[in-house]
Amino acid sequence: MQGRKEYIEKQITCFQLSSRVPKHNFYRRLKETLDLTFIYKATKQLYGQTGNPSIDPVVFFKFMLIGCLENITSDRKLIEHCSLRMDMLYFLGYNIDEPLPWHSTLSRTRQLYPEALFEAVFDKVFSLCVANNMVAGRRVAIDSAPVKANASMERLLEKQPNLPGPRLVRSAEDQNEPVPSIAPFSPRQAASVITAADHQLRRLKKHQQNLKSAPTTLGAGNEKAKLLSNKTHYSPTDPDARISIKPGKARKLNYHCSLAVDTAEGVISHVQADFADGRDSQYLPDIALKLQQRLAANELRLEEVLADTGYSNGSNYALLEGWKITGWIPTFGHYKPQIEGFPYDSEGDHFTCSAGKRLPFKTFATHAETGLLKVYRADYQDCKQCPLKPTCVPKSQCRQIIRTAYDPFYRRALERQQSRRGKRMKKLRQRTVEPVLGSLVEYNGLRKINVRGKAGAHKVMLMAAIAFNLKKYMKFTTKFTLSQAIALKVEWSSPSQDTFPGFGVLFLN
Image (cartoon, rainbow, N blue to C red; front, side):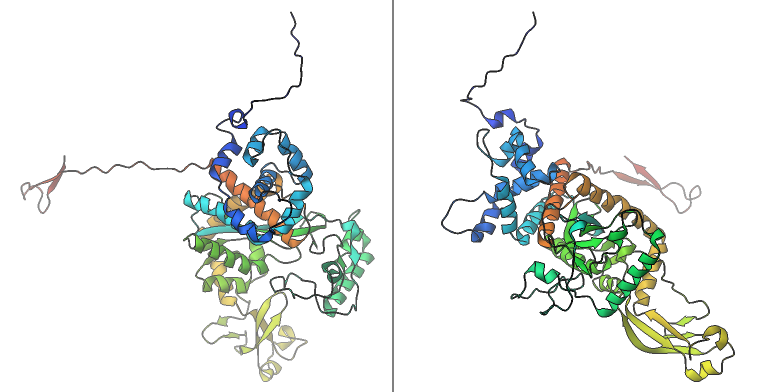
C-alpha cells in the first residue's frame, strides 16, 4: 500500500533548539568558543538612557560573522538565510518563533559603530589564534588586491574647476592626515573639486588626446572608461571610491585591500582598506607600523617581511632596516646596480668616466615618483676638453648621473633577492598570502563592498578577515610531539695499549 504524508501545521508547544543542533555543528562550537561580551562595555557610550532598545551589539557582530562565513553580502538576504537555519538561530540566541531584526537595522548599526570597535573584535580573535600557537609573528607575507566598490562607472561626474574653498578631497598621498573638524562643504561637494596640480592635468590631457587620435588602441566598449581619471571625475554615490585597473581587467571603481598573513599557519595578522589610486609601496609603512603594534601587544616581534615588487621603494627599504626588519622585497626591473662605463667608488661617493675623470656628488633632488635623488656631475672643463664628448654628452655641457639616494639599500635588497634564500622566500610568499586573498574574495564576502565610504569598506574587510581566522581557528588542532629521554649507563674498559694505543672502549648498557 502506498503511503502518503499529510502535513497538518500545528503549534509546537515543547521544542528546544539545543536538542536539534548537533554537538559537532560549526555554529554550536563557535557559540561555545567565542566570547564577545566585552562589546557591551565598548558600545555603552554610543547609546542613550531612554528610547527603544537597540539590537544586541553581540548579536549584530554575530550577524556580520555569519554573512562573511556564508559569503552573503546583502543584509536582506542575510536575515532571510538566518531565519531558515536552526543552527544559526541557536548561535544568534533566537528562538525558532522569535522574529529577527529588520535588515535596515544591521545597516544603521554598522554605520553607528566606529572602526576601532571592529578592530577590537579582530584583535580578540587574533589573540585566540596566538594563544593556540597558530601565530609565530616573526615572518609575515604582505599583498593587496582591488575590491569592487558599491558604485558604477556609468554615473561618474566631472569635477568642477575653480570652486572656492580649501582643499578637502583626500588623495592617496594625504589620506593619513587628519581631516579638518569644520568643513564648509559636504563630502560629496568636496569630492567635486579638482585638486590635481596643473602639470598633472596637462599630462592627462595629452594622454587622452593620444588615445583619441589612435582609436585602434582602445578596446571595444572601453573608450569612455579609458578617458576617465580620478583627477577629473568622481563618483557622487561613493566619493571615496577610486578608478583603478589591473592588467587584463576592465577599469572599475575599487577599494584597495592590503593584507598581512603570518607564514606559520596562514593567520591574517593585519588588514586595512585604502584608496585604490595609490601604489602598494606607499601603504607599507602604515601596514608595518600597525602590524608591529599588534604583535607587540601579543608579545611577538616582527623580523621578516615578504612582499612583491609593488612594495619596492628606497624609503621602505631604509625604514625596515631602521626597524631591524629584513625585507624580502624584489627591486624594480629598471633598477641597475652598475652603470656601464662609470664605476662607482662608495668611499669617495663619486663615479669615474671612461676618460678617468670624476663625477662627484653635487646636490639632492626630489621626484614625485622616485623620491629622493642624488645628482653626480662632472666638471665643465673636463667634459669640454674630452674627445669622447660627441658620443657621451652631445647635447649637454657636461655629463650628469642621477641615482636614488637609497642606492645602498637597493643593493642589499637586490643581493637578498638573488640569493638562494630569497628565491625560497618568493615561493613562500606566493603560497601564503595569495590563496588567502583568493579565499576572502571568493568565499568570505569580499567580491564587492556592499557599503559606501572608506570607513565602511574597512569594516567589511575586517569582518571578512575575522571570519577567515575564526574558521581556521576552529579547524586547527595543536600538534604535540611525544618524546622520551632514556638514561644510559656508561662503562669504560681499557684494553691493552699495544692493541689500541691511546684509545678506550665505550660500552652502553
